[in-house]
Image (cartoon, rainbow, N blue to C red; front, side, top):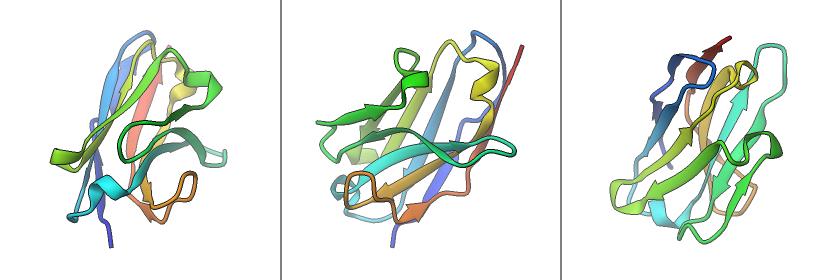
Length: 118
């Protein structure tokens, strides 16, 4: 079992930045692929970025490439999402997720709200 807790959300103006953090329980954090997802009101949840255990492989959805950066520190059981040049369309609840296989996530946090005003 892995428990995930997100933090760092908030209200920011367009063009601003936020850094989301996700803290994971357990001793095997480095085994897990970690991902960030988001869900806007009335829309389906979508993946934003994911990263392998050794940070060797990264993925970003096209709309955030060049603006968002996913990273992790295994010694701290943490994964981060640095979000720069935020746009109103980035407004959503952001979720942290963990899984043992690329693209397949079994554990989820409760989410943190990100609101970008125009």
